[in-house]
Image 1 (cartoon, helix red, strand yellow):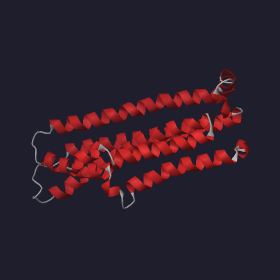
Image 2: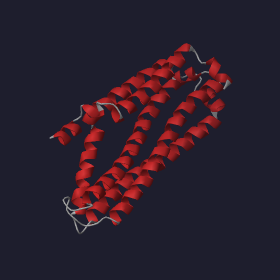
Image 3: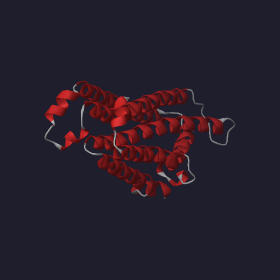
Amino acid sequence: MQALHRLALADWLALLAFLACWAGYAWFSEHSRWASGGLIRRTQDFRLEWAYQMLAREVRVTDSTLIGNLVTSVTFYANTTIYIIAGLVAALGAADRLLNFTADLAFAGAGNREMLEIKLMLVLGSFVYAYFKFTWSLRQFNLLSILVGAAPLGERSEPGIERYAQRLAGANSLAGDDFNRGIRAYYFGLAASGWLFSPLLLAVLALLILLVLYRRDYRSAALDILRH
């Protein structure tokens, strides 16, 4: 904690910009009045339609396969994140050697051991957050699998089908939203690594990631396909 007092004003401002970009975009894309026009909300509409179509099918092998593909994707990211976390923990344990090895590089801007550890902790924290989101998403996809297994057969006009379709789509959306949060943490984890070089690069990368996320969620060809 004492090393925090060694952070310059530029470091604090860059860190504030980083956190503002991450938290601000999370609120904008999930809770603001503009969220309804983004890729996340549009996808939720199709999850509900998927639920209606599945409930009307007697054979649900296709639905089980699709859920299996989603689970596989989340599992891949969760496993990969573990390796990234392990690598960052190892880097924290070898901070002195890392500083000596990179003394003549731009990486030397990390400063002394304490400063390097603080900056690595920001990167580590981003990926730990991602891991928790991926694993929670995985559990919710498992819940979705249970709901699919217990799903009744019927058309959307029949009693109880509407409510069950909403339940299926809700579980699917919750799992998908947490997966999106994990992916977002990956993006900002990459931005956090810029602090190892300079506070300016941290702020610039955070803003760049913000623009990339906005473009993909609100100005992408994928969104145009869902709209039409």
